[in-house]
Image (cartoon, chains in turn brown, green):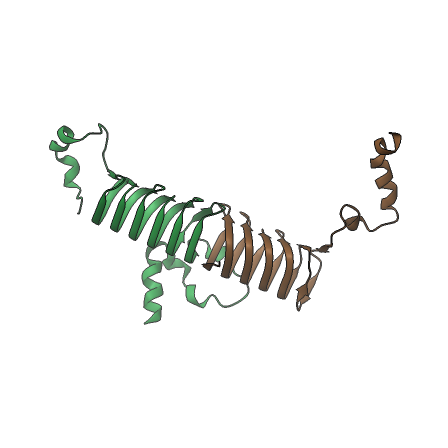
Length: 128
Length: 158
C-alpha cells in the first residue's frame, strides 16, 4: 500500500534521471519552443507541440500549433489543433481551429471545428 | 417575391397574419418550396426549401431547411443545407448538422465539429491585422472590403 500511496513522490524522484517531457507517457512527445526557427521539414510519428516558426512541412500523427507557432508551408497530420498562424496548406482528419488562429491557404479535413474569432481566408475542402 | 417597404404600412396584413408581431419576419415552413427574392427582412427562417436571394438581418436555416442562393445578412446560422454565396456582416455559425457549400465572407465564423463546409471562406474587415509575410495579391485593397469586396475581387479578374 505504501508504495502505491507514495507514487507521486516516486515519480518526482525519477524526474531527476529522465527527461521531463518523456516521463509522463511512453509515446514520443516532441516540443518545439518559440525560440526555434526552422527552414525545412519535420516528420514525426506521434505528437508535436509546436511553438516555433517553420518554413517547410510538418508531418506527424498529432500536431499542436500553439499561439506563438507560425507555419509557412504544409501541415499533415491525423489530428491538428491550430491556435497560431498558418500560411499554406493544412491536411488533417480532425482539425480544431482555435479562436486565436490565423490561417490562409488551403484546408483539407474530414472533421472540422472552428472557434469564433479565428481569422481564416482559405479554401475549405472536405476529404473522404 | 419582393417585399417592399410599403408592405409594412399596409394595415391589411394584421388581419390575415397568424403571428401577432411578424414585422419583417419570413418563415418558409417545412415541406414548402419557395422561389424568389427576399429583401429588407429582419428575421428569416428557412425550414423548407427556398431557391433565391435573401437580404435579412438574421437568417436561420433549420435542420431540414434547404437554401440555394445569394445571402446578405448580419447574422446567420446554418443547421441544414446551403449552396451559394454568403456575406455576413457579423456572425456566421455552421452547426454540426450543416452541409454548406459556396463562398463565405464573414466577420466571425464558428463551425461545430461534424459540420461540412466547403468552398472559399474569407474573413472581412481585419486583413490589416493579418499580414502573413507575402502575397495578399488577391485582397490588396482592405478599404473596399466593407462595401464591395465581392464586386472588387471580380473586377480584379477582368
